[in-house]
Image 1: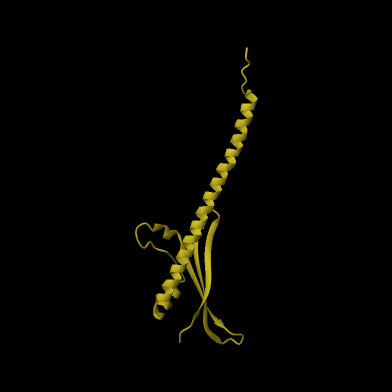
Image 2 (image 1 turned 60 degrees about the horizontal axis):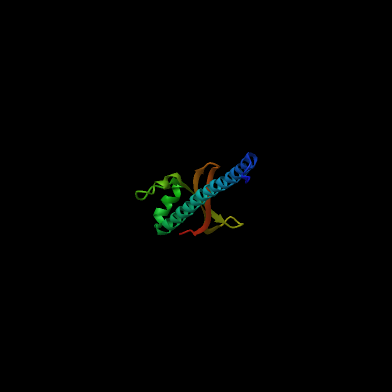
Length: 136
């Protein structure tokens, strides 16, 4: 008679254990990748909103800029249906007139733009500093 060869119970349990461990690592890597993609998406949206804020500032008249800089902070509003995600981002502007070593005005202002949003790890932000020529 021919002897039928098969797998021992121990071999089956060992192979299932190894596959389970590998599956845990693969699933964990997908989870980490998904989380990193979400963080990247938030940073991309924040940079987009920061750019929008700066370009909007360039389009303003000098009188509107004065009113704008007096506000110092705010929240982005949805501009059309489907952009409700903008509400979780806030903006902040700090304006500082520059002076030389003798205390005289340089006719320049340092403007710091920040876009902030909440996350699991606390508040995150993107900021940019630029300089504007003071009129008058």
